[in-house]
Structures are given as structure tokens and as C-alpha cells.
Length: 504
Image 1 (spheres, rainbow, N blue to C red):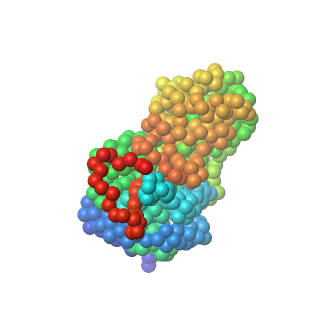
Image 2: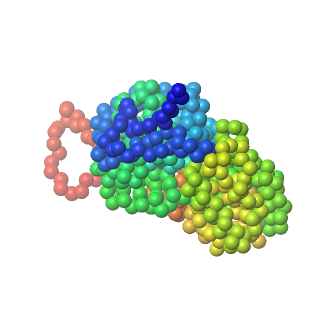
Image 3: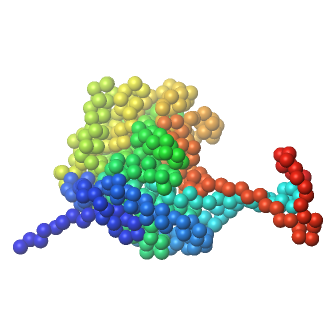
């Protein structure tokens, strides 16, 4: 008799697995096979309130614990993560679909933020001024907010949460993580690692679900801040709704990242980098290059090089050593394919068509091969919309100035890259371009964790970016203390003075 295999159920977390009150359970699909790999419980408002309450209960004691105690837990978490990151990478590949090497890279980049947060004793140092006036000293400090919410996207189920929660926890807050329902298992793996590292129960909690869970976090009075990464329409919604409830918000939205290639660039290097940045993780990256701007007479040669490299990519199951995996869901695969249809109908030249790829994987997977368009114009849908898939568009520009105008006219301002051998052009580009993260001969300019991540214009809602010093500022609030200690041997008092205080 054959054993009946039941998919594991992913639950919420309050320090231990928490089933909650709702009975809505949805399937989690392995995008490389099209089959159920797990099931996930969706929260109702009552469940969300219970998870937030667990965080609220833990926040007070954790916020008053010493910096030494907090940093020790961070160091222990970092060591455990480093020793076991292959486990987490395998979970990401199974539920998201990206190849194992890419998943491991995601974990490693997230670990950078953990390492940055390990330095929290230094990061939270205040200032002190002695004798600002007669007998008066002033010092500043930064204190935790309490409970904070992190709402993360499907494309980086480990790295994006790690942009936020290590700093938030190190600063003394309790975190409620709401992961994507498409790939929720990484969140519970991370929660178990925190427990093993010695983090008190409730300081890191997980709330699974959909919009019901999101709205509950945006509205709950105990949640003081929200960090969000996702599409621009949802980022705007999160920012406006959470702000209306008095919360501080950093909501990172969508992107349409350009890569400008000048005539003096090394075309072979530029082609390699364009293909890597355009088709890595099947284009499901907010920092993916989706538009290449070829400047001047190099366009034909550059397109030919990119086309050759694009055709050489192997699409298939991420566990089999392929170059590019599937898209995350069937619906998303079909949406991206519809943009290919639209680009062809609009008159763009379809140089490489990925709609019917040869794949190394299950035929039921959500496959779309790398796709390359040439002669794309800014009025076409494949240029104006964030496709979030393996579609690279070539736009031709006659000059450096035309290329910069094209980039700056775009409503997004997340990332941009310039490929050139001219230091003069690079310095001018850094100054002229209206984008938050700039790469010079670097196609995916994601900053190291001790700098901050975030774009301009419609790519960011809120005032502060992710991780780095911005992250520390976001998850704490400043306080300035002015003190006077009278000399007991001196004559007390000093008389009444109703004028505004002056330093003397």
C-alpha cells in the first residue's frame, strides 16, 4: 500500500508555531513543477491581533535589554545563518524558482545587513556636550519604537526581510514579518534560527496571509512603523494607509531600470553584464535591467552580442544547474508573455523569442525563456510598464544627452547603470541622472548594507531608505536631554526669570 504524502502546512509564529483562528489554507506551488510543495495558513484579523500582541508583550523587555545582550544574539544568528545558508537557499529555490546559486547569493547579501546590525553598540551612540551653559550639559540618545511591521515581496523571501529585521531587532524593537504567501517557508526557517540564537519569544514574529494580514498591520495601533517592498501601486497604498494611522513608513516601489552604453564602452563586457542583469532570477528583481540604451553607432554590434549570449542561456529547474529558472506563478508567467505579444504587435523587433523555450524541467513548470526586443520606443507598453520578467528592451539614442533625458523622463527612479571608459562621462552621469542608485560599469548597483538602499520618484514612498544609517534612523527615535546639577555647596536658587532661557 502506497503512503499518502501530505504537504506541510506553514503557520504563523509567535516564538513557536502558531495556528491562529482562521481556517483559510492556500496551496504553495513549486514553480518548476507546477505542483503543491506546502500549504500556508492565512490570518484573519483576530489572528493578526494575537501575533501583534505577542510582539507587544516582548518589545518592552527587549527594548530595555543591554546593547551587549542584543549584539550577542545578533552575532549568534549570523554564525548560524552562515553555517546553514544552503538550507535556506534550497527552500527559496523550491518555492520561488530561482536557481540555487542565485538563492545562495540572495542569502549572502541579506547576511550583510545582519553583519551591519551586529555593530549596533556603535550605531546607537549618541552625542554629549559638556557645559553648553553654566552648569548645564546636553546629550542625545536613540530609543526603539516598540513593534514594527515588515511586509516583504515574493522575489526575495530572505534578503529583503533581512534588509529590515536585523537592524530593527538590534535597535530594540519587536518585529512582525508578513512574508509573501507565494513563498512563506523561508520566514519560519528564519524564525526558528532566531530562537536557536537565543532571541526571546515574541521579538521576531511571523504573520502569514494576504491583504487581510497586511491591512491588520497597517491599522493596528501597537505597530509604530511599516517597512514594505513591492510594486508601486501597492507601495503607494501601504504608504497612504499606514500614514493615515500615524505610522512612519518606508515603502519601496517598482522600477524600470536603464543601462546606458556609450560608444567608448567595452561591448563584450557590456553585453555580458546586460544579459546577466536582465535575465538573472528570470527578471524578477526590482534592480533588474529591463531597458538597455545603446548610444550612437554601437547599437547593431551590441545587439548582436547580446542576442548571441541570450540564445546560449539554459532555462530549467533551478536545482539542475541551469542559468534561469521559472517564473513564480502561472498567472505571472502568462502576464509577462502578454507583454511579449504586445511588444511584437507594437512593432518592436523581436530578436529572441522566449515564449516557447526548450527547458530542462517538468513540462508543468511556469516557463518563459529570455526574450530580447530591439528598436523599442518610449511609447510602447513594453517600455512604459514594469514587466518583472525576462524581457530586455533595446532603445537606441543618438547622444549622451538624449540617453539622460530618456532616463530622467521615466516616472521610476530606482536604479540605473552607465557603461563607459570615460571618467568625465561617468562623473557627469552621476550628477545628471535623477535616480537613487547609480552604477558605473556595474549593472545592478545594490549598495552594501552599510549604505542605504532606495530609489527616487515613484520608486519610493517615505523619507528614509532601507538598511545602512537610514535604517537605524528609521527604527529608532531621537531624544535630547538637557541636565543641570546644582553644586550643593553653592547658594541654591537663583531667582525667578520668565524670559526665554538663554545660554550663558
